[in-house]
Image (tube, rainbow, N blue to C red):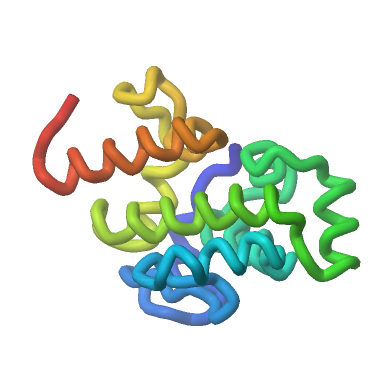
Length: 153
């Protein structure tokens, strides 16, 4: 995976280093579950993939591997303008984990770093790698809750 860049702590939208401001097409985690389900079923705009890639300072290949789509499919989705529902669900899952990590570990730069570093509580996998499945993402969410409340494993 790509190494996070310490010099790029501003988001692609120019937001503050600490706060993750989601693009308007991404349903907020405080929104009703219906909003997220509808967005997933419709398919997120393909630019959601690029937004996450830039926020996490990853290559297309690295993020495509975690989202479980090929680089060719990523290119095709960009031309089509939308991700398929399964791809949208996986991208949204990672966006929300990144947003939560920024809240818990101290900002976007720290979240970017935390998401990519091997973690002993995840068997040596990075949170980003571990979150490639729904059960893995739930474990990463629990780990963030433990960190937030000072419970270390």
